[in-house]
Length: 235
Image 1 (cartoon, rainbow, N blue to C red):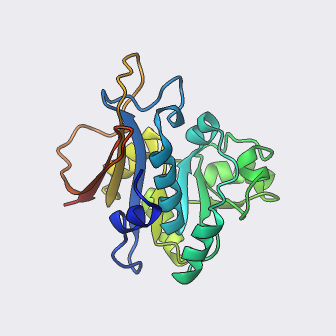
Image 2: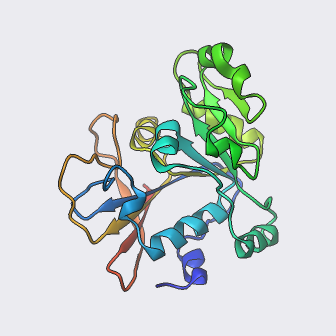
């Protein structure tokens, strides 16, 4: 397994002044994004360590409501050694968490709220905020961006006003597809697991129209379990 310091070096950010959206996904070697309905089942020791490193570097972790439900998101607390790294780089102890839910079909009692170490943000539409936003005010900050559909460009602008320029998006595939379709993805980190899954599992991108969106391979890390960690940057 690569050392934690090697992962920090391999995924180092070049400045924090401008907004940067970094995606992080795991996929089987045959392209499946889940195993048994969960992406976490595809990962390994290094993949979990890399997730912690990427979270440590982020100002905010962005995730779709479907992924929150499927993966059982709760406490996203980074470890003590990562808190030290964040403090040394002028960051708050813990990254913020933002959940995208166009219809606010969440429960204020969900672990993602109840176990949060920092008050989460719920990103939604004006319509949903007016209809259900008051239910979430005790547990989260409701951020309305867009009348009937979440405007992701507006979301990133709102994040930037809070000083959150380094955005780590952990899915799901439809959120990735929407960001990609809007030309808002700067970097994609893909863990390729040495597994062939078959079945009907989807790909890491869903909902985006077909297009030749070219990224450059910026780095490759491997471990002794056979995982490959690919870092792509927008051209």
